[in-house]
Image 1: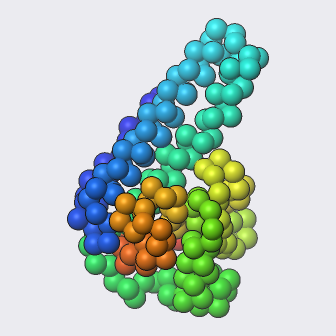
Image 2: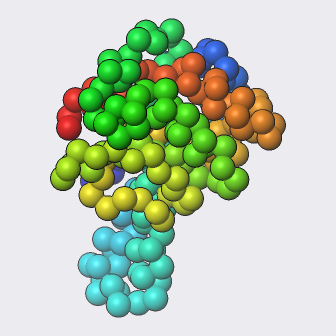
Length: 195
């Protein structure tokens, strides 16, 4: 089975994100999809040839998490963006679980943004633990390290430099403000409803 990159061209023209930035970012995402497919094919070939005990197989297996998560996290990220103005009265403002965890929507957003401006590269992810429905704003440093086992991403923000440096230089906080102006709240609310 191979994966096809999703088309996010509909995001071109999003306020706060130049088409150059977005096009470059789409290309990076497409590279993760390509590398995921290449690794799946190569790993299958090694298995069929009885080479699954080789150091090469082991290193490819380790690399797979990086490429796969790079692919999926970018899909979550792009899907929770919209160039269309969204209703800022999101149903999340009164979401019981969000309120229980963070006190209110504004507290959640402040905590999420504070996570995003921390020094370093990575992702900020609002996770839901499906076992007890608790929510966590989490910093994930690398695609393949630091994820909460069993939890599902509900809201994803890319804070690797490629997501903002073309338009914002080192002003990450300005990028985060623009990101929050481009949220597809309908998509995020849909993810919440699954839990």
